[in-house]
Image (tube, rainbow, N blue to C red; front, side, top):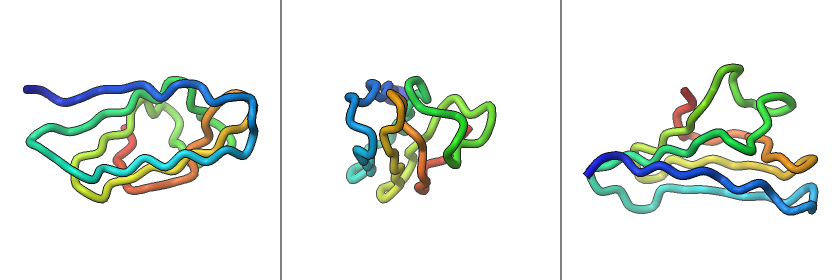
Length: 80
């Protein structure tokens, strides 16, 4: 099979909520997270980023809910 893709749903109205995504098992596929519902400003997301790719066990991404969007706080997933 090919890579797996997903989109993170918009957060509830609770600002400050934290979401951590971590790859714990890897087959031969990468996991790609579309940057829909993720703020491109106010966080550490590089301008023009459209995906985060998890390609190794331990890759992670940390987000905080702010104003109905997720702000990317950091992690080891590869932004592209």
